[in-house]
Image 1 (cartoon, rainbow, N blue to C red):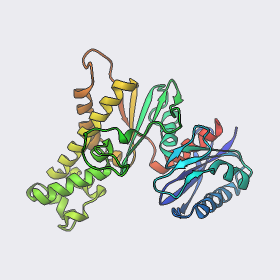
Image 2 (spheres, rainbow, N blue to C red):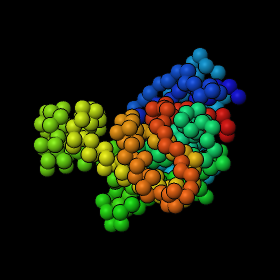
Image 3 (cartoon, helix red, strand yellow):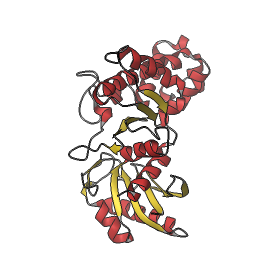
Image 4 (cartoon, helix red, strand yellow):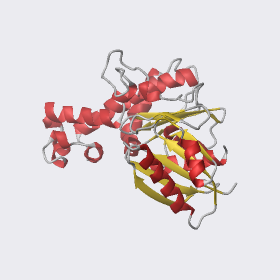
Length: 315
């Protein structure tokens, strides 16, 4: 098969691109997501596809949706940041574009991109952990994407790490993403800036002395400038990340973990404490092989587009 279109559908934006067989993105376009209006969201997707078809002969469409997708990769059962509830997205897009389509969870699509063309290429047993505002992920076992019996597997950000811990947006308490995500990183840095400002000189300077203005890029910049509060924030979040990875290793025994998403761009600031915590918590350590830990190759939008496009090719 030749070219496909991959569409990454999030709560704020729709990113789409033409993808070739080697995972290259030949052309892209973006739209804002009218998240509260299902018809308008569908119109935006169709408009993006129509734009990309101008000048490119495409054969299928892959739709990466931020939500639960049914086992037939047809219906978005639930999307927390969109108005979709049991939305027959595949049929709607096929009817309006005349192209065959598949629907996939967006994190699964991004994981497939890393497994096929990115940092995990060549590894048949792989877990991709996307660390952004929250935590998402995808699992590839024996070269196959693990979707689960009901199509909604690999929601790894909602493993309970601390019973009755911090309340999560999913409705539960103590989920992994409450301790090892971009949101958690900001929470730690703001707390340290308020309670121990003597350790946060650079952090506060970059935020104009307003702890509430501290965000992820500021924390990364301050950590690179050796600000102790920023470095400690990465150590705390990276340690929690490593704990969760060790738990996943005990269950899945992959050959590699790929850490992707916006927070992963901090590189060793995050990966080094994660690696140390993983090794310290790994069950049977010293008597078993351990998985490799790598940073992802692609940005979030790019990974979603490439993965959705390739999954459409393999539908």
